[in-house]
Length: 198
Image (tube, rainbow, N blue to C red; front, side, top):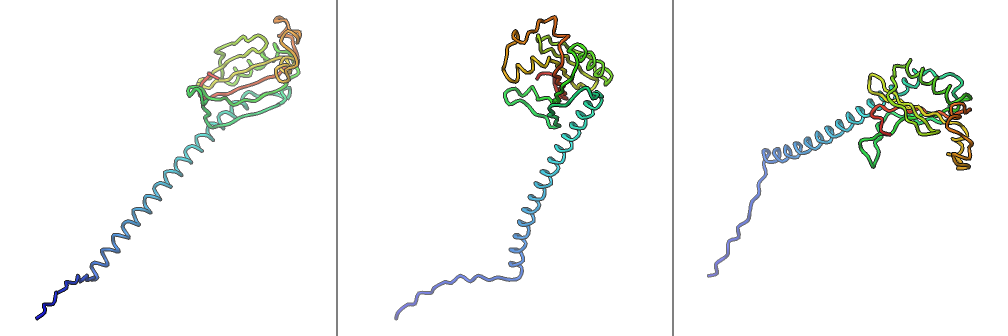
């Protein structure tokens, strides 16, 4: 008599409850995934909107400062780099770039400094520094909100020498006492909401 080996077969039964559980786990995982994606997108959108709002507010503040200076037609705009985002130096995180506007003016250095100083004071700024850099002199101002305004006025001949490298300070013919009477001039007005380190 030969003995037959009995082979056990696994019987996998599925019922409605089992199928519903499997579907429930899949739906739950899908729901968690979708929720995660939506929260991530929402956080990203809110962050970008906050940054955009901050930058726009800063830009409006800077543009208002330039408008408050009330420069007349004697100031001819040559170059403008006005921005609202906070641009930090790569090599020095404590310093930020300033917005700037550059003008030409057919008047003397002394008259232009006096005119711009009165305009800055009328716009709510107080002088906090005076950098004597020889020909390239700067006046530094600050208002009650901690905003810095820096004004530099250089004679055109000296500015041309800087840009084109055509002559040295001595070759421009300037004696330090004569700089005040030099005309026309090149004006740079910088606004910085964060610091005065540039």
